[in-house]
Image (cartoon, rainbow, N blue to C red; front, side):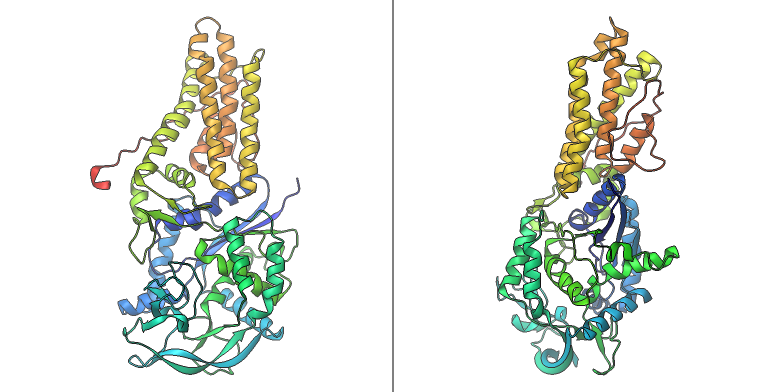
Length: 548
């Protein structure tokens, strides 16, 4: 199979607060799983993201604390990097939107849209806080959503119903600065001719195959309603400045459009760091390259509509192959939210659960097609029952019996019984079936299928009972353990995207080298292999009453 260039584009978190488990399940663990799988297949994967440092939530936070936006970014961007290390999430580059490369790419993108006739200037009314003496960016305005009547909707989007808004849409708007009702004042901005992309977007969306229904239906519905021109600049100095000066000072490119351009600037920054400045083009200009955007469902408009439209307006760049946006993770029925204090901080989970165990439990509950409630006791149950009692116990028993009966050496198998042949076929099928699910970005189904492989190996071992057979027919016991070893390494390969550390430990212990990476195929444990030392893969989790 020919290797493909695969861009794994990951949502850019606002650098204004710690992440929670909902962020990890919704947008950050899934791309790592997918990227690992595509690399194991032999594809050339580039996985990028970074901290969004210009989002208005950052300036809001800075204003609340009386510090500069740069101070907020300086605190949380390094914290994000520790999360990726703690969770074994491997980015090729996790940067920020505050780099010189990003500024250059964004400004060049602006000029390209301008040259192509998709930007124009116009005067409009924008909310102004008379008490504070300043124009209000969208997120500095709150009010009641006209769509669902949620009383805490923002001026750019309602978190309750997900509808994209303009500040003037809000009922009873109020300034986040002073709490007073803002007034409308005229201001001049660049506007983006988004309305010209209705037909091209609809044609493109209708041609998409394999997308998650909730993503495609939402995007098609929104475009069918009709897209309207949107402001491309804002009265805000914290951001990427315009590369033209005809609007005067105090204007920046709107962060909504600037942030998604990070998917283009990050590969360029990565290429520059490699000493091959044009290398990024293989992922962006080759029509055979693929790109996958991992985001939460609140980001569907930006990645399935606005970003594709921007790319169309620019020209010469690949449109998304897929936008596998997840639904929400809830805690006790409430959407995880760092701003609203719903859901435990990520550090709580990292203190109590081993990394691979936490990754596995999250993967088994990914909110791919519907909102998923994450329960701490359920995480502990999956680790204890599925990883400790099933997977870890299986590996330990085969290593232990091979040591007891054959001094740790895998035996040359004898004649294979039909049960053995069937077991080996199931082992091969585990890798194939898991891969097929991962190809379709059905990551939750993939981990379930991989664990099924471990359960099938456990069932085979129990049915064959080599501990009993060894008393009367030692060579037959050796064949059974050889078959079980093949099933184990196939399950380990299938589980590797989800649990890289422990899976590599299993493969190495069974003589399958991972020095050059894990290959997506059912490996063979050769006769004569001496099984390595392997401590228990997982420890039982016991949550204290105070953890409940």
